Length: 86
Image (cartoon, rainbow, N blue to C red):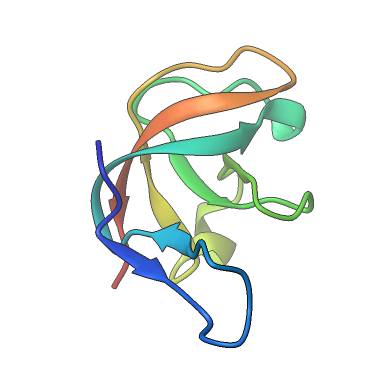
């Protein structure tokens, strides 16, 4: 799966950071907020650069990254996420 867009800073490093606005994306996930199961909604984690499981759906409105397509029982790891930013 390739990134939709690669952001680069002309005055910074030669390689930019890949970002995605939609699609299936391998994402660093953090299961410290509970095990992530396929179908769970994900939001930003307290750990920078990680996604975590949504536990409070009322607070997650407008802050959801997407839906988990794979599981992560514990710790941190890569998970396939159906990203749908709006």
